[in-house]
Length: 212
Image (cartoon, rainbow, N blue to C red; front, side, top):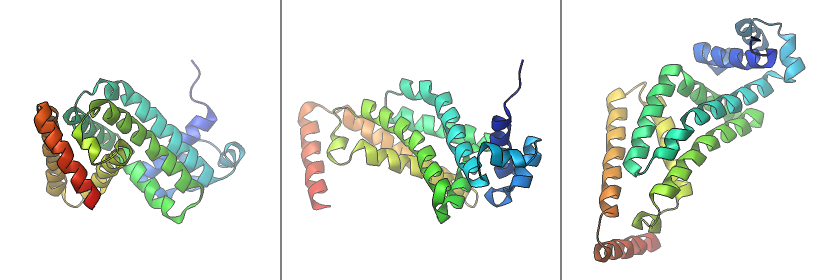
């Protein structure tokens, strides 16, 4: 059986370098050493170290999103979506993938190709979250207050931010997750209201949205 291609080994080497040393540790030399190849091959396959990082960010994210796609499709309530978010957060943190994403975000602050690639990578997670929200919130009065696109971005950004937050305040990060869970319970309660109560809630939410 053939092993991974040289291009894939370089992508894997870039990701491993970020996991162990952060984005500032990435160079042609360190990536080539991690990949077990000649650093000239980076420029042959990618043209630059920045392009290698960009492609590594996007392809790695697509692989991880695909890993969870079936589980996203099984979500039937907002509570289940947030619980899946907890699972993904824990698993990706253990694999070092959340750290990679956080590091590429830091590196993307200067703009350029890496910034665009990071946006593309984040969008892959946001689209999966939005697809689940579109399904579970159909007909919900919550949609009178917000759109699933913005809500999907907020949820995704929240879980990514928790990766940074929990390094300095693990208890606070856990409280934040618990608060999100409580909001999910509230939404589920709204879903169970009768038609009269639902209309009253919807009217109140619309009035609030107009004032904001």
